[in-house]
Image (cartoon, rainbow, N blue to C red; front, side, top):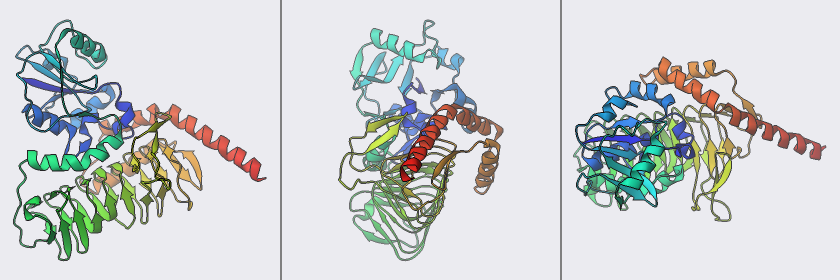
Amino acid sequence: MRVCIFEDLTVSQLEPMTLTRPVFELICGQTSLKVKHARHFGIASPGAILRPILADAYGEQRPGCPVNDESWLRQDDGPLVLVNGRWLPPAGMFPRAIEPCVGLVEGEIAYVICRPNASHELAYSTLEDDLDDLRDRLPCHDAGGKMVRHLWDLVHWNADELTADWAALGTRPTSIERMPALVGPADRLAIHPSARLDPMIVADTTAGPIVIDRDAVVSAFTRIEGPCYIGPGTQVFGAKIRAGTTIGPQCRIGGEVECSIVQGHSNKYHDGFLGHAYVGEWVNLGAGTSNSDLRNDYGEVRVIVEGLSVRTGYTKVGCFIGDHTKAGLGILFNTGSNIGAFCNLLPNGEFLPRYIPSFASYWNGELVDRAYPALLFQTADEVMRRRGMVLTETLAALYLHVFEQTAVERRRVLREAEHRLYHHGRRSA
């Protein structure tokens, strides 16, 4: 049995995170969706069908993974399982016999088990039609689990997935020389032996497990509430880490973080509040930066997605911040903010616009196009080298494509902002 995870045409609804990575590399709980797929089907290394623009960069990051490899897909050596990258599978191993069928979640395809067929190209450009044809010909079943449609889904399911991952990964408590002050059951706390913890730390496992991974550093006066995951090499500085939080690898975290996901390699070193948020990679949030995650009237939060105001169904929704975005001192993100990749945000003492397109700057209260991507990529390379990584030519090419891909949307938003500013000035006069 081979497993191949695919992207469908709705991944744009999970931007800005999916601008720069496949949808199945998004995190929910302790792991990515891809890891959950592999675990559910009991395989070690799945292949991938994804947007062609991501193929080279993803192949470079995951050597040995078949990416958009039609010859691998056509091998007639047993069943092929095509898995929707947006599917959050249920707990446990795949329960069915490996027979041709289609698994559905509320009418959407979660997976297809088939045998390679010459009538199906199984390429990204034709995949939607091939899947529809397979659904018409094969028996359909309830797949279980959930289908991720927006970023706030991952955030609101994160606490439950942290608890599920604790059970699925067989995490066990680890004895270390210096244990934190513990509130709640001791058998819900796992600390890697290589992690370093200062005195004066409180770990509260009352509501769920806490995992502190290898080489993590937690400084004095930190409080961590489960369920929570602190990733490899991440440093936590006198912070309040509330329940439902996942911090990816090599982050620097201070202040207060509640029910949020940080993909990795990002900084929130200073005081400030981050709540019900999803933050990408290589993001820097300056001192005092905070977001609102609750409206004053306790009403349902809306988020701008693909130019439309979308109802979330939740009263607590924070912000979503794309890769390589930088926020200056004291930035204030409004409830339900959607901020693109490679943005530069400077304070003006007020809430920022709730939607800022990728490669835009907020400067002196105005939105400005960041028209020189080469300079941005030079800064990105410097930032990455500080963590022992480099901006490869392949990754830079991907970022340049994102710059070009988002140009029309960026110009539209900037024109609307200029129009509002002009009319506001006329009224003031």
